[in-house]
Image (cartoon, rainbow, N blue to C red):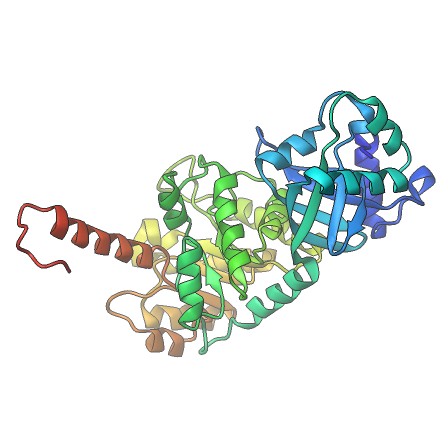
Length: 393
């Protein structure tokens, strides 16, 4: 049952009432399916009639008896990671097209449940696709994971993050004792052969986040640059759809390299992301990255404090002045902000020193990725270099 013509009103009523619809739809089982546009890369939500099959939700791409497959079906065949809303619950899910006898069995059940489906199946020339939606992360788990992630930010006993860039590295981090997994945007982008800037297509980057979240049993937070130009509501929707519950958002002005966005602009974006997170029912952990030290050096502390206060007031949970490695500066910021501060490590600083200074979170960005590449360089040089007698490192 495809209700494209009345989508906006149905979606608004569904979300406002927790899934209770009025009029002709009141007695029908309806869910909201959000897919990623195959051309636009943007989120698209469609109300659909459904049945359940065990723990799976099942819908049909009937398009109201249209001779062509609906857009939402074409979207999910290109990108099967979707979000499903059923009543007040929300799930990250994987979409798969039913085949063979499974298709026939499920289409028969859909025809028996949803008005018009039997007629569509009998009259349209195309074979109506049946899509099985298997939840991967229920929203209740996402909310709990977000709360768990937030609780790990403790001054003096910080959350330690070794930033990952794929499933293998994420699993190694967890096996080593990581309580959460953070991604590095530059490492993920480089591993995919993409630029680390807003021009990169967001879908493959979020697919990596989704694969990581599905592979580990700890909270995942994603480095999202400045949001890749996504509308705040879509950003939250796609972040949660990938199974992540936290994000880094930075204040660099990528349209004017080497400069920062006005703090008011960044604060408005953080506030909009926070509002979208509240509407989703998941307390997404926002780590507001401040790039003042990156461009203006160690003398930028006053600007860091000013920006941090704006971002915290707007709804950030933690502030992250990138390249903050000096324990005394960490202590100074913590004393002035009375909030969670994310610091980095350098070759001259140790975890214990930065923790004792009051950091609530310590991350290393692409450090592990660069170290891994350096190891590849050494091995490649030993094997492919001119001196064949050199032992392999």
